[in-house]
Length: 85
Image 1: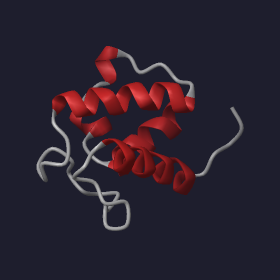
Image 2: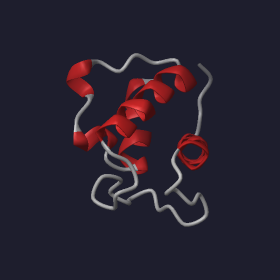
Image 3: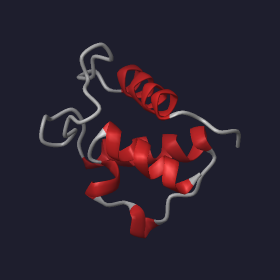
């Protein structure tokens, strides 16, 4: 995969979330917002996001990597994707 910027990754995740989850406003979602604590997504929603990330960025997310520190915020997801690419 060609090099992709942190901003493009974050933007694509936020766009997907705003299209998929009714509680997400792309204009106001901060990359550091705790998605569970703020009630934006539940555990099933996080699994949907993991599925999206695998498709969108053509990576495999191992079960051992599905941890809060990798997927609790858009920033955490972006960092995980950058480490995985």
